[in-house]
Image 1 (cartoon, rainbow, N blue to C red):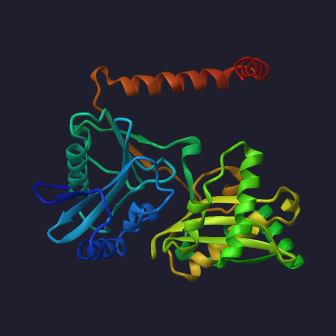
Image 2: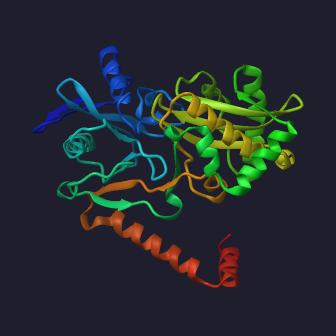
Image 3: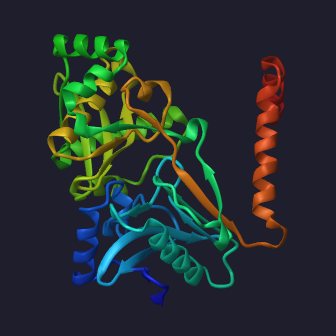
Length: 346
């Protein structure tokens, strides 16, 4: 734990779950931070899905008041905070954001020490004047952007902004009445949903989460899971992360292939949005921007990445540029040639 002072904001670096007084001040911050998310809450330290590595949080203070929070992990000589589609930096509304960010980057520098080669963090809100600290700025583009819904509009207004196809499918699904949607509540429901989780990952060629981690969702204060039921059988589940009064994030979805014709995933998304409006959250991040999610309307939002390559000759920057060039070159090739290259390298 380290503390350092700049002109207007102090910072505090912590690596464990906060004590009662600090936690109370952190929770006061969360009630006043419009882009606060689950991974910016103190529960970041105990959530099983929050990332591999040594977890840390940096808090920026104005006197006793917390004005900004950044959480992340230390792994492989890197400090990493969030992703383009899931920033883990938040600021109190109506503050000097540049000064608070100044404290955060000073905290990153003190926590990085001499061995960290690359420092990366993401923010929903742009931050000025970080270039003098060595940070390069990049706004997210393409698939790295997310669909963000303004829940203050209310559920009825948001429904009208869905695509015509999404509205038609939802009306048909609700009229048929073959699906019941409810919150996950019991251990038996959890066990049944876990089987769907394993089936879904097997079809995608992924490893499922361990049951112990998966089961932690049931009692998490910052997670909610909606399930769709057909004739007493769970057929799909949608997983949400949230911070009370602020941002709800669409984290993932699992469903059984043979029930897709009933459109459970579309209905789960709509019921989750209704629930978020009823519970007075401010924003709903769909977590991505692919067509299925884009049909829920909303704004296409780009986050901001701030990165400091501390290596000689900026090795990480050079490697990233080379990778991006290779990807662009591959995508520019004729489809038949891309298939031949893929078959050779598979």
